Image (cartoon, rainbow, N blue to C red; front, side, top):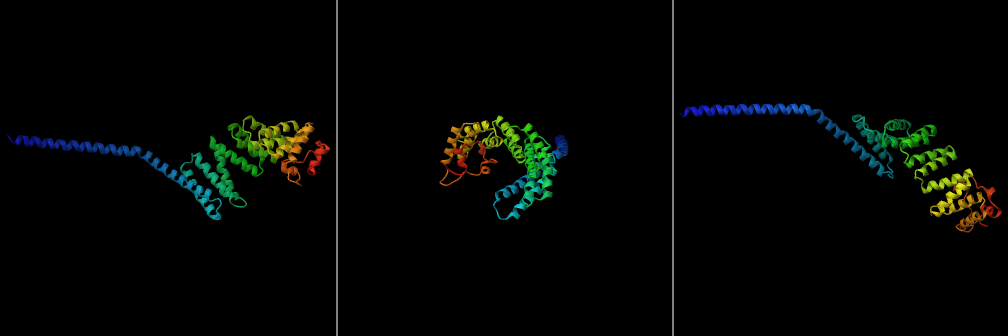
Length: 309
């Protein structure tokens, strides 16, 4: 009677072992199947971490370069940018679709090229190639690339190329004041004074005109002989407390231009009161003018050109 329960217990243990063996095999199979299915994602995550590390290392080098701008060891600063460029190049090769990596790489190469005197043309062309790639993409980063390209082309006197980029930028981001500033500088370099006025007028229509812009606008209008608009511009600056003594002087000249001799002479005398004894008027070029429009001055006002009456 005792033998039957013993055999029964033996079969029960065998079944339990077999069941556990099957469960272990199934779980092991699931584990390896899951590992195989997830391995591309795991590898991609590892890659993500590695290019982020390269990017972070490059940023550290660039920050050190920027913070050591007054350092006498310029060779060390060059090495920092060279190392940053190498890290960013590797990051870009891992993530060729990353616009931010490409932009930072191009800017780093650009800054490195400008550290040589004269600028290293080989490095500069390479940098501009990267920046131009970003410019041909879309988004805010591409607008930054466009402005840098426009400034560089302006520096190289490649005016038509710079203007082409700036016109496109005005369509893409019309609220960015820097685009107008570059275009204004370009028109001034080409001595297109009326076009420069149009740029400032367009900037004003976007409520982007700065106090310095208003001063420049008044001077341009005087140079062009548009005395009425110049008068209004300088009057607004002085009454808003923006213009200094020179604006008072230029306002007086504009008043003479529109035939208001009494008020014009009054403004000139107010300016004279700010001069030290024996001090003469500044040169026309110092005021941003080509010349003084002396043909507008009556005898009393004209005497101010030679000194205080």
